[in-house]
Length: 77
Image (tube, rainbow, N blue to C red):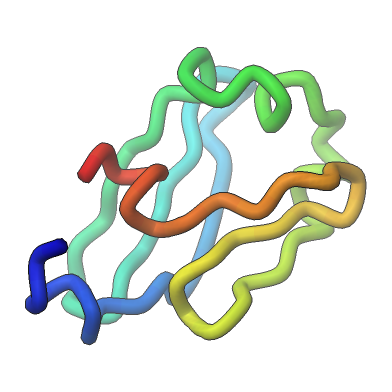
């Protein structure tokens, strides 16, 4: 694992329509995450998408899902 990524945290999550998620990171970068790679998130309603939790800066959880997504998984590392 890249040691530089250990210090990077998720700071915010926003959605662009139904097809993408903007993942803001503590290093001032923003990643566009295509939701077709994460079908469970893609299938959430807008309200369910807004009900998320950032856990320890490294993980993302949606209350409507049983899955937890790690920052590395989300940005493709």
